[in-house]
Image 1: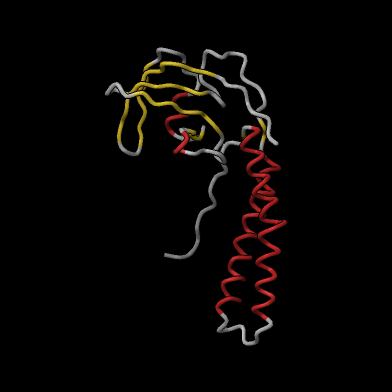
Image 2 (image 1 turned 30 degrees about the horizontal axis):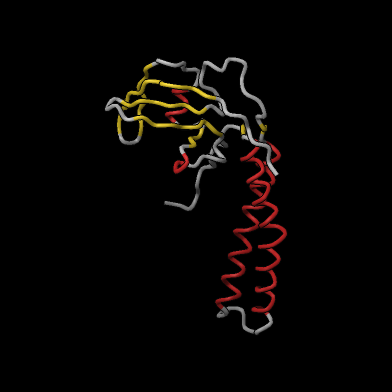
Length: 171
């Protein structure tokens, strides 16, 4: 098998103001702090002589490559994103930014927030709008029951509550 990897399809271009601010802070940190620091270390390692066996130099160059790759990605992605500042007109249905409380077939409740693919965090209950659960959940209303095919198998849920909490203003 060769090294070719098919390009990934970009996720949906929507993001919350908080998510956009987080990506912008990461870009700023990488470009203004991390990259100059690593560049300085690479320069110091290069000044020591033979670069072919200099682990600090080789590792530093790899770090610079990864930083530059991430910076390019963040610049392109931030440019392409649409920041969603407001709640939808129909707050009785689940759309982007909604906090949704679900009950599974065993009676357990789960709370999820539907966010963009660049900001999902399973530990917080934030799921990407491109995930199987969120795709199935979109446009559902309270008391709707639905089934979704998840990696662990098919699961049934009932929508208990849908809320739209105000988007926080990024600093």
